[in-house]
Image (spheres, rainbow, N blue to C red):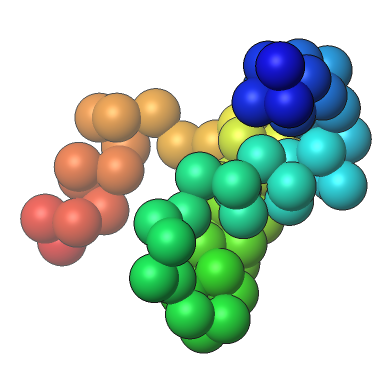
Amino acid sequence: MRKAATARRSRAGAKTAKGKVLAAVEKLPAGATIEDAIERLVLLAKIDRGLAEVDSGKGVDHSEAKRRLLQ
């Protein structure tokens, strides 16, 4: 019963920053270090920042990215 309540709480709060942090920490393996948790949270923050940039029209389409990389 406790596990189901935790899963419901994680899904319900996953849209808030706190919910995302809790969900990410809960998914870490038992032997994870604090450094592992920090790395995961930094990665998720960077992904969120990138998605926000794309949503606001600041993204670069695939062909433009490819052109820039081949210069």
